[in-house]
Structure formats: C-alpha cells, structure tokens
Image (tube, rainbow, N blue to C red; front, side, top):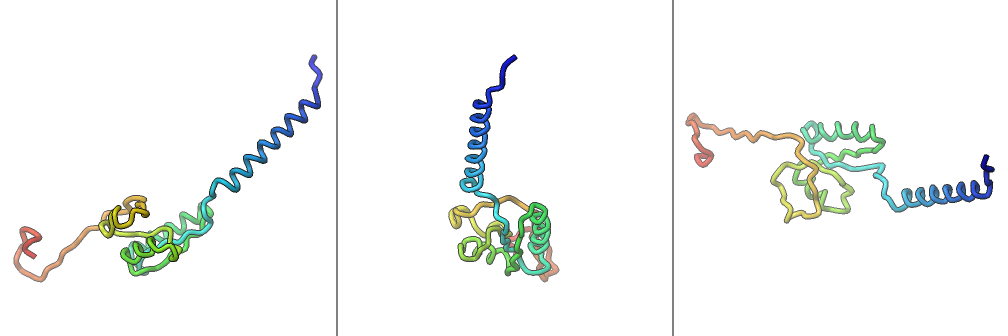
Amino acid sequence: MQRLDYGRLIVGLVALAVVIGVSWIVLEYLVPSPPSSVTIATGRKGTTFDYFGERYRARFARAGIELNVRVTDGALENFRLLRDPKSNVQIAFATGGISNGSQAPELLSMGLISNVPFWIFYPSSQSLDSLTQL
C-alpha cells in the first residue's frame, strides 16, 4: 500500500489555488462583463417602437439588466443619437433605408423586427396602374 505524501498534496493544493486565483483575476478584470444598464431609443409613446421597447425592457430585466427606454421623435432621431457618443444611447430602433454602411460604418444592424407596409392614399376616382401616375 502506498503512503500518502503530505508534502506533494500540499504543493498540489497550493498550485490549484494559484490557478484558480489567476483565472478569477483574468476573468474579473480582463474579460469585460455585460453592462448592468443599457439605454434604447424607441419612438413616440404609443408607437410600435415604443411597444417593442417596453417588451425588451421586460426581457432585459429577466437577464438582470436594466433597460432605460428613451422616448424620441422616431427613426431619424434614433439614428442621430446612436452616432452621438454623448447621448448614452447604445441601442435604437430604425426603419430600413435611413442609412447605409458608408454613412455610418460604426453602426451595426442586429436584424429585422418586422415588415412595415407602405400605404399610399390619393384623392381621385381614377385607378392607378403605376406609381409614376402619382
């Protein structure tokens, strides 16, 4: 039967403690943790952007992140706020086509939320065959 060598056991435990300590320091100070608070620019109260902002607030809260919903005049103001580092807005809703990669290369799109129909109303009794008739 082998005898337990207490010297080797203590050296092993110390080495394990050092590895755990160094790993904790690296994870705590060198790997950024997610923010505890984020600001999103939505739109006017009662709009679709406002509705989605409130839904995201609930989802972020479940993850332990406070989402500050900032009411704005809409997509153009949201775009301006995203480009302004002093605005403290990290996320915003925008409609497609207000910018492109050359106008704002520092911004990234997270994807499409929904398709928005574009309605055209005109006061006439004539039927239209193409948009050029407008």
